[in-house]
Length: 207
Image (cartoon, rainbow, N blue to C red):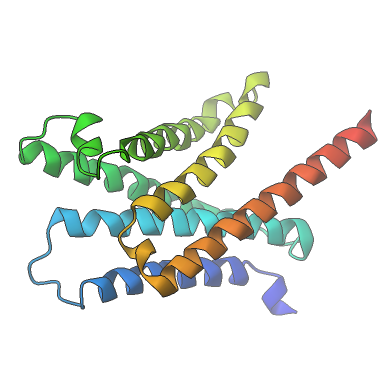
């Protein structure tokens, strides 16, 4: 029972998915890190950011179902810091390196990094980043009536980032990890559907 009284399961899930991200990244490089470039490092940050954010959604599902009496305070605090650093550095490092290589500034410097026809998926990722950063303004605006739109946009951004990683990620094209990535996407959508169903039911009861 002690296991269900503290956020051990959310912590364990976040550590496991972060570990999987590091493992598939390292394995894709044959564990050779002596000559790492920014082009090789920045994908790891994207994998970590999405994986830990996905674990947040799963932790929220746990809280609504069988971990209702657990306080998640420190878990969300520290893992949110990790996500913030990763989502800033993932595109930031790429933009920096592309600028150094003479490709100018975003978005064109980053859209030109991918194959023709896939630039819009890069822009999709950039747009999602802005949504995630907007969520950080909750300290000042979460009491405003319009704020309820921001978390919904965050949900859409999560689905967009899943697709962004699925199409553009180097590691997500490795068979075994692609399967895991798809599992992330399916479970994310199921949890979102469950969450919105609860919200609709609660609203119908209050009418």
